[in-house]
Amino acid sequence: MDFLLKKQSHSTLETRKTRNLLILLLPATIWLLIFFIIPLIIVLVYSFLERGTYGGVTWEFTLKNYQRLVNDLYLNIFWRSLGLASLTTLICLIIGYPLAFFIATSSTRWRNLLLFLVIIPFWTNFLVRTYAWIIILRSEGMINTILQSLSLIQEPLNLLFTPFAVIVGLIYGYLPFMILPLYATIERLNFSLVEAAQDLGANHIRTFFGIILPLTLPGIIAGSILVFIPALGAFITPDILGGAKTVMVGNLIQNQFLQARDWPFGSALSMGLMVLVLIPVMIYFRSSNTDSLY
Image (tube, rainbow, N blue to C red; front, side, top):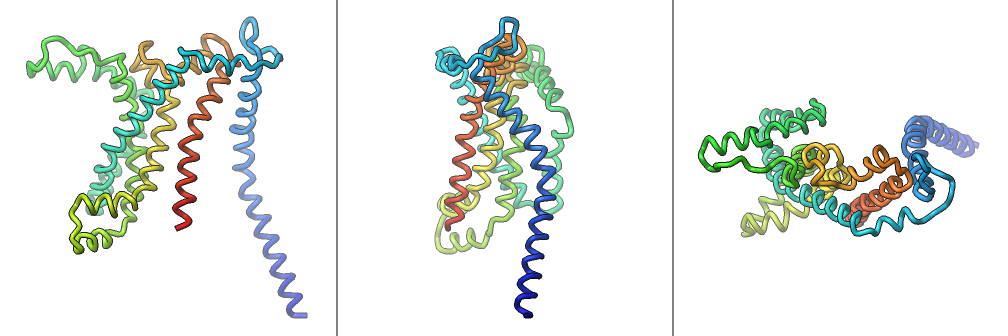
């Protein structure tokens, strides 16, 4: 009898926990359904429709929007976007890893200050920060003024509205997204393993590649994804700092929806971009599952 009462009590408790969990998940589920899943379905459906005469869509099924994606013009834009996003991610990693390591190994007082300096740019609107780079990079800007005053150049350098300006803007905008995951990983690093490796005769290079790098690899992957994905779909930075000379896929999608009013083709471009974004995400989850096996 006592066993049956305990079993019934346990079942009631489990039911109550499940109900409470569903109640807690309900707001997030509704939010994702309204603002993510339904818009995604609409974009997917639009990508298979015809463009209307004056914009919008006509409900006629077609595959020509996806066939247009293999056009050399659009493929070049995709490749350019991939190249700029990959280069941005690599440079952010090269800059962010030593900085994150320095912050994680600093004293508590300096660590909090340095983290504050990394986070403080988020207090300013991204658009305003991007416009600030126009003042820095233009012909009469800070960089050219300093170089000319030092007699290092005679004529102003053409820095603005170039791929260089776009990369600089992307690095500046997304560098904190690389530093923070790296910092979180390095802070949890067991430095006694580093000391053990050095006691066994490993030099700094072997210690780094044999101990530190493998243990901080999850932070590297997470930071790279957090930089690569928004950099791949960026349209504000290329539009402001690159002008019409450096068009990325985000600018192309914006143009199709707002200027060309070709919503079906813009939707097909969006789905193509989503496929490119899903590749690094799947790699991340695959690596996470592999790490969990060990």
